Amino acid sequence: MDLTYAEYKSYWINSMKDAIQHANQCIKSLKGVVTAFNTNIDAVKNLREGDVERLLAKLGISLEGETEVEEISEVEHLLRGLLKAIRTGNGFELSISKPEISTWILTNIRADEVRIGGQAGISANVLATLGVERVYVHVASIPRIQAELFKDQGIFIPCKKNDAVLAVPPLEAYNDQHEPMIHWVFEFHEGYTVKLNGSYIQAPKSDRFIASYDPLNSSLYIDPIFREFMRDKAINIDKALISGFQLLKPRYPDGSTFKDKVLRTRRVVEEWKSINPSMWIHLEQAYMTNTEILRFAVEELSKTIDSYGLNEVELDVLVKAMKLTGEVEEVNLIDKLILVSRTLKLKCLVLHTRDFAIALTKGDVDLKCTRRALWFGSMLAATRTLTGCETTMSEVVEMLRERTLPVSLESYKYHMQLSNVLNVDARRALREGFEHQGYNIVLVPALSNPKPVRSVGLGDTFTSGFLVCTPLASPR
Ligand code: GLC
Image 1 (tube, rainbow, N blue to C red):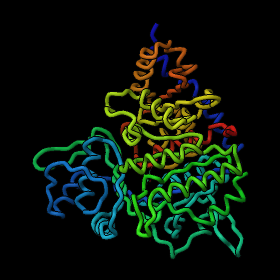
Image 2 (cartoon, rainbow, N blue to C red):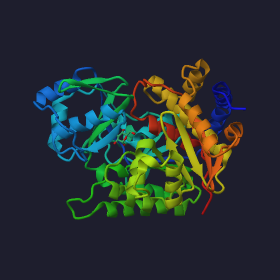
Image 3 (cartoon, rainbow, N blue to C red):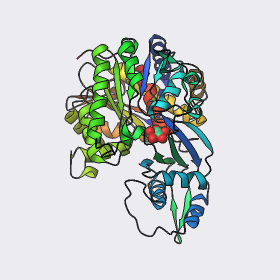
Image 4 (cartoon, rainbow, N blue to C red):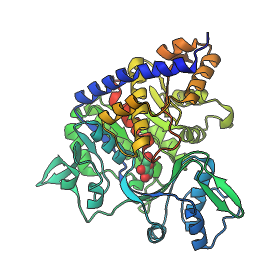
């Protein structure tokens, strides 16, 4: 007998308490978490009807025809990128290559708010709000305006005070000589419409487009004080999230290339692992346009990490970058994940989408723990879709009690489809997951919210929730 949506839903609702208890225990037992390397300021613009048309009119351009843009070196590229994101409903990020463009945006667009940005920055605030007592965040620059965006409890920044390396709260670490790294985040809602050359472009889903001018993070700068701090304290760090490779450039004015930056990062992360082999290291991919850089970065870094995370748009870019197949579209989701896991020899690959999350694990990774970790990550991200901000554990519990958001129907459909294709009993798969080609596959639903208050940071929130719940790494 087939599993009904009602049964599927109640299975997940009944497992909420267990996942929350597990997360609470994990949070209490954590000695310290690191989030590195990219922290920046997000200037968020919530797009309203007419905004894009006004910008086009100001520039006097009509944007005839579609051209692929890899980098923003003209203001026109900004609009092209933005329109592509709106048309597809899939968010992505492009780097701004010239400071004048950043200045143009600053003079012509008023941000609705500024928030902490970057995988490292966002996750630090998410974890601290959840109650993690010691989150050490890497910052490439820390002007006061950025320091003020961090939570005032639980976050520490290693810096030098009287010749000693100390981790201090952000407001004791700021330096106004530092340049702010500003990323422009354009948020649009499902149904957002732009009138262009007599026709209409409408967003099929809510998402965001990011244009970032960030010379420091784009060279994957690693603060030597942070490195020194970790040499001393890595033993007290249980989990680390690393990210920021998406901002890398092919080459730099001093003659170095992305390869130098990736290899330096790899050495740093290996150093942490050699001091503390049980530190669980999660690498979050984020959206990248340069497939050569992506390929090099994942091939080098996958050797040192415990888990790798990405969303469905990033997965397609990765499959293409790794030349895993010529016809990406024809390969189904699970096959893509298996191809990636196998090629990179990953022990845990995590895909997060707006309808579900999947982990593919190998070997001794605890399945029960993986399921709880994914489910907690989903609940945490869902709560944020309602508030637009980082949420406390009590807010998560409250949201779940009120049952504001439904268990994704798409996730149920995918669960049934997978059960059929893999010839597994759908009920058993709920409890035990799926097994396929030597991998354990755990699929958990999202709690759907087609109109999140803000899209930026949802993936990072999921990942932070997942990361707190993973076990400690087993030494290799
Ligand atoms: C990328 C962007 C950053 C944004 C983050 C959200 O790191 O550079 O601006 O805050 O993604 O996930």
